[in-house]
Amino acid sequence: MPKKYTLFTPGPTEVPDYIYQVMSEPLVYHREQAFAELFDSVGERIKKLLKTKNPVYFLTASGTGAMESAVSNLVSYRERVVIAACGKFGQRWNELCIRYGAYIDDLSVPYGKSVPPEELERRLRTDDAARYVFTTLTETSTGALQDMKAFGEICRRNNRILIVDAVAGLGADKLKMDEWNIDVVCGASQKALFCPPGLSFIAVNERAWEIMQKTRSPRYYFDLKLYKQFAEKGQTPWTPAISLFFALDCALERILKTGVEKVWEKHRLLAESLRAKLSKLGLEFMPEKPSNALTVIKMPEGINGTQIVEIAKTKKKILFANGQAEMRGKIVRIGHMGAFSRSDINRAFSVFKDAYTQVKKKRKVR
Ligand code: PMP
Image 1: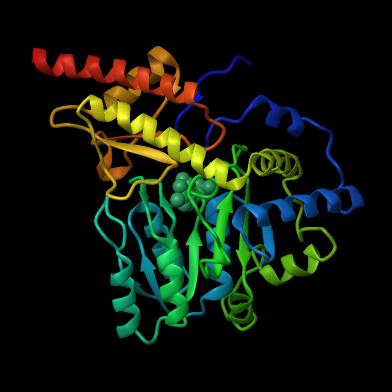
Image 2 (image 1 turned 180 degrees about the vertical axis):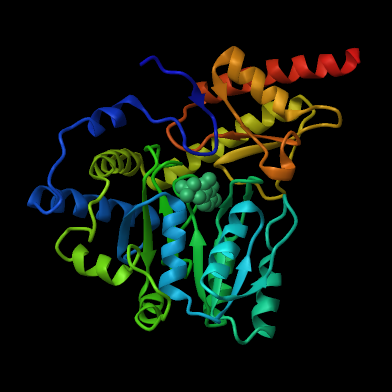
C-alpha cells in the first residue's frame, strides 16, 4: 500500500522502515525462552533510557493503560490525590482518579503554563491528606514541559509519591527517574520511541511498590503483582504485543547506540531550529516553558489553524495536529519527537510556511 502521509503529529510519530521490517519477523511464542531473551533485552534497555534501576512492567495497551495501571495499583477508594496538570493530558489523571473514587486536589494551571514547583510545595505543606502527586512531563495539548527534577525533590522532601506521565516526553525531554526521585513513570511506544502504538510500560520504585501491596482498588488486567511474578520468568501475564517488542528493542538499541544524552540534545536542537524559523515569520508559541518534543504555534488574530492543517494534508501529504477541544483552530501543533532529522524539520517548516502564507493572504483579501 502506498504511504499516505508523513506524520508531524505529536504521536503517533513516523515509524522508520527498519522498524516495520523487524515487526514483520515471525512471532516467537511468549512462553518460550526466545521471548524471555527479548523481554529481558527490552527491559534492560528501557531502564537505561529511564535512567533507573527499578523494574519496568510492559502492558499491551496505549499510554492511557499505563496511566490507569498507576492509578488502580496505588489509589484506594476515598484517598486524596494532588493532580498537577497543565493541559488535557494532565486532566486525564483527574478523570482516572475520579473513576477510582479518589478525592482530587486539583493543582492545575491555564493552558500554556507549567505548574510552578513552589506552588506544588505550598500545596503539599497545607494538604496533609494527599499521599500522591500525579503529573505530566510533556503536555502534548499545549507543548508545555514541567520541571520533574524540582517536583521530585519536593515530593521526596514532603514524603509524597510522585507519578509522572512521560508518554510524550520520554526520549525527547530530559528525565532521570532515580536521580530526580520519581517514584512511578508511565511511557508508551508511539512517540519519541518511534514505534507503532500498542505497547506501554510503567516503572515502579520500592516506595511505590510497598504501597501497591496494600491498595484496595479492584484490578485484573493491570494488576502489577502479576506482572512482577511473570517478569521473573521473562514473561507477561497475558499475551504480549510480541511484534511491538521486536520494534521497541530495535528502537531502543538505536537510541542507546547514539546515547540518551545525545538523543535529548538532538531533540533540543531540532526544536530550536524550527522555532527560530517560525519566529522569523512573526509567530509566537503557546507554552511558556516549551518541551523539545513538539512545537505549539499560536495562531494570530484572524488566522484559522484548521485551514493550515488542511492545506498541508491535502496538498503536501503532511499531517500537523490541530488544537484539541476549545483550542481547535487557535493553535497548530507540530510533533518532532522520534526519528526525525534536520531535513525533515526543514520540510515541515517549508510546508507550514506555504500553508500559513496562503491562509494569511486570504485574510488580507477579505
Ligand atoms: N499522555 C500524554 C502526554 C500524551 O500525549 C498521550 C497521547 N497523546 C497520552 C498520555 C495518552 O496516550 P495514549 O493515547 O497512548 O493512550
